[in-house]
Length: 121
Image 1 (cartoon, rainbow, N blue to C red):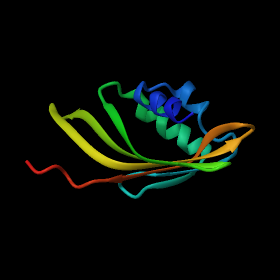
Image 2 (tube, one colour):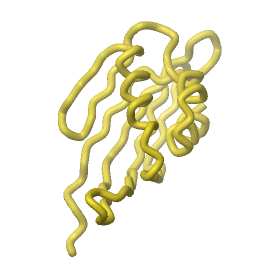
Image 3 (cartoon, rainbow, N blue to C red):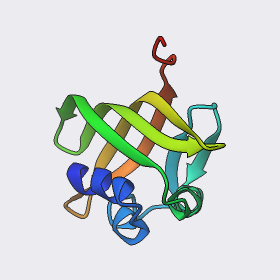
């Protein structure tokens, strides 16, 4: 499920993303600017808007993976690239995904994105 979630984000595929997230009403999302939402609906709404833009790409490098019997934590470094005002834009972040087993499947319950300082020029 981890790979499916990341692929859904990378391909801007909302239907696939929804298959990887909790079925319950609570899902925490913390964005690099400190904005926090706490519902599945808010998570889907954010990604609906985020996926509407087709100019960006994102890559994830797995840094660590901890898997228990019903919880799993995936820590990644991401590279987000887009064009802003006609100029290339790059942002690196730590992204931590927490999954919980629901009905025998891993489903996302927490997504935190912490921006890293810009690369030296």
